[in-house]
Every structure is written in C-alpha cells, then in structure tokens.
Image 1 (cartoon, rainbow, N blue to C red):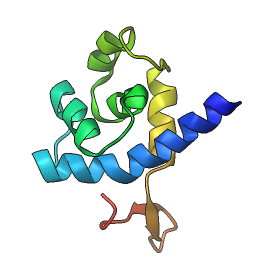
Image 2: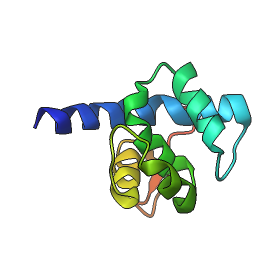
Image 3: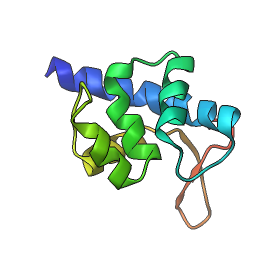
Length: 106
C-alpha cells in the first residue's frame, strides 16, 4: 500500500516536471532517446527510482522493453504509461468535451 502511494506520488511529480524539461532541453520530439530522458530526470530533480514512468511515456515500447530488467521499479509498459498520462496536467476542455493539455504545464 505504501509503495502504491509512492508510485502515484512519483507519477504526479514526473508528469508535472518532466515534459517541460524535455521540451526545454531537447525541443518537442516523439520519441525522445534514453540519454535525453535520463538526463531530464536528473536535471528536473526527480527520483530516478521511478524512471520506469518516464521511459514508458517518452520511449518506444521496444526501447522500454530493453531497459526494463535494469530498472529498480518494474511495471509493464502499458501500466506505467497509463499512470504517467493520467497524472499529466489538464486544465482545459474543448467544446466537444475532450481533454486538452494545458499549454503552460508542459
């Protein structure tokens, strides 16, 4: 239970800081590289123990799968990605009711 709370807390911190840091340091890309994501985690002051969240969000599945065994916290790609995305800041709603990312948050 406590580990689940820490994971959710880390997901909120990663989602709040990492997208902005990646864009600032490397521009908008899809996907980013492993060294870019790793460096952004460090420079954003995030706990690298939860890097699985960032790798699932910003790397292709194949790169993620190659890294997974070496990570301290291990989650399946879809679960880690879903957790990250669920915590990304959303501030606006379109007229159609779809979620729109807050442009000032990342």
